[in-house]
Length: 210
Image (cartoon, rainbow, N blue to C red; front, side, top):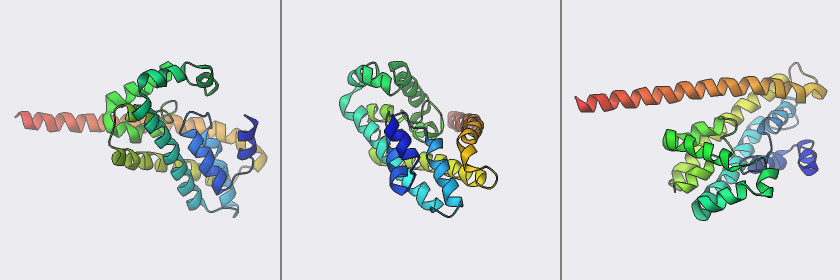
């Protein structure tokens, strides 16, 4: 998709919003190649980092809302049919990925709308099972905003930090390198958070049983 490459090379508040909207639907736009480079330029005085985070999060909310309503109104058969279609494959999508996001949502409940936004392979699809489950829209937007906001802050901090020692021509490679470290760290933090809530729930349930 050459037009996405063009947009990535001309980052401003509008393109950050639009690309993050796409990233939160089913279009394969890597968020670390949007928010972090924009923050890198913000560190150089060309943009405002807080506005980058704001527009990135609003864009993520809008894209997630599209997925939510697709799940809510279209239903599972049509979603699966699209995932298995030629267009779905062009978006690097398949039924197994949708089912994986559904299992994650079923296992973790509404909190998955927050934590799922931080997990690669789940983050851009977690809104679909929320729509299929007809999750309250107000809660959905609140949790999506929290999850997307946290992720965008992490990516923005990475881009700002890299500006201090990475030349612009090396930025892409460094983002790929550090992006993997961030993904693994986030996965570990999410696992710890989920374990905490499970233990808290079991202890609470045990006290009620006494």
